[in-house]
Length: 287
Image (tube, rainbow, N blue to C red; front, side, top):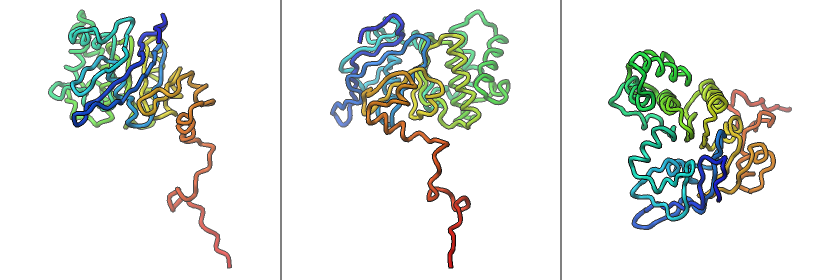
């Protein structure tokens, strides 16, 4: 794949292996993909198809049990494999950010939330004083719908629920204002109101800042609300990619058609056998 001027992240013919019991096994095979500047690209597929592995590789993360056997990953023309560890950390700290599926795992357990924000914000806005750092942290927490942002700054990560930890992780990533935000199932465990608020926030951010996003999820219904394009991943490969409307309305690959068919639809009548007993229509008794 040749990088176009409008592509921010380009993946070309990527093959990734994991070592298990002394043997290398491919989890991503000959995968090519591009995230354009200012777009939200959805990445959909079943659990275990390699979505989270791809998100990790796009951040330049290097692990001993994993190897990039072929292909390349370029961010804004920079081949990530050529960067030293310090250069990668700098890139991830400023221009690339991840919201992991388990947001709590990304929060340092021994630091209060206020300290986490101060540490992150100082790296990008060193001119801000203590009061300004706290005000910005409250603003970011309020944006993601966390109750009592002021009180939250004095608490530790373990004092929040899993869903609240996820929102804090999202707020920390957003306060960096990265060029590319990678979201790995960011609304998992959220209630409907919070999920709606997060999606609306991401749409506003894309419109106001032209931030590019890769939204990883198995939920096509959610992706259809927010993404411009969607890539369908199956067994370590991209089997279909295109504009959201085209893929959902005119799926070409059998796996894509199966995914689209699994989306719940309000107009479809419920199967009476699946309803709770209290909601089933009573059987007619005839003499």
